[in-house]
Length: 600
Image 1: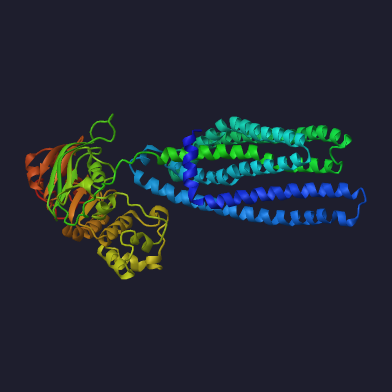
Image 2: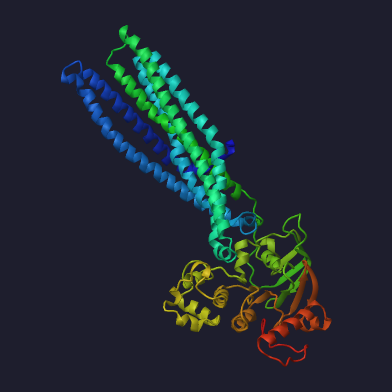
């Protein structure tokens, strides 16, 4: 593990240094009271066996009581402050990680499995709790305890202090080193396999219907079982490491006791040491080694925590695909769009997703982008929203380069209606408030009415308080699309982006969605991405993309007259649409459908 990783973790914990040091000081004081309690008790028993005056025992008696009471109080305070500091650090790490994660979406996050991302920002960050709570404090406690007991033994006899210090600090260095050497590869492997298991479980939950329908549930269960067995196997090895280091810690304590007795007994015989201190020496030695017992486990916790931190930083250290401008332009408000020579590749190894694209769209204008799947239509919308940055060509909004706007200001200028709108597991009101957080209920109802959902809203027993379910699964596809339209009505913006807004909808539902969209398009500059070529008569310009290139461009009538790809697909879709409506007598192929997006 690199020193830089430790420095980064130290910087993240820096705001909580006071709490961590307080917890460490209380830990040292707690162990010191434990050593004092054992030492004083042993001394008291040995001294009392000689039947001295009770007055000679008063100090020891008071010491036993004081150490016993103080030890419990200090342990409580140490746990309270250390857990408080740890939970504050974890809260800080979660908010920090989300702030770092947000600029990476969606471009950089597509490089990782969703389940793996979730495992890193949830499970791995939770693993850091053990790093601060059980990893760092024991080292400070051990150092303080060793120094105090060395001073105590040295005051009795110099050779006792030297022997204890050599064995104690030798064990304090050796045992954690062995634990880390054995634990390091296991911790990194465990973090990796846990991430794979998390991703596999998430896949199984999200794709449960597909697994069942394709008869692959048994195979998926076997994969989960295999990964679970691997996790169990690694954890058993970790338990073996923990047990071995614990046994070595006990062995070192016994060896230290034997060595101290070998030094102390001759000293007692020679008259250089009072015999009543023999019990004190043994008790203090064993109590001090209680601090060492936690060191190997602390080393394991550090390895586990640092392996988790490495995975977290590996994700969050990715360079964002989009960088904010140093001197941002004022937010756009007109909605004029100018694209000149735009070329874009997702990676240098891939062919261009867009190649030499030109487009001029005045405020309030409408443009449709059509073409086969993979032509680059959705890529253009992603670039407009600055989910990716382009390197060749120019995109200007309101006469200013797109890169000159802050991402937040730029996206505020767009109302987006995607093909598959996302809904949070919350109420209808909460999902609408995403577009306008301060809108009152009357405004929300008005937006739903405009989106052709007034009667549907009135049929809901709980109205705006209706829960939509996870990803909105409690509402139909048509209702989901119209709720997305209601969001667009609520969002104060100058441009409207439509990404296949009526895909997967039946003709009747599609017609209702079209009626809801028409007032929106009339008030804003509109860019439509669609496979459906019907109802594009009112669009200022239509671009036909193929392989990222503009294959055809012009108004609806002009493209029909060219008798190219657009004309062929328009006639084919028109015939299919009329067949769906049960019309046997087809009008001439050159006639037009009623105005409106996708009219059928």
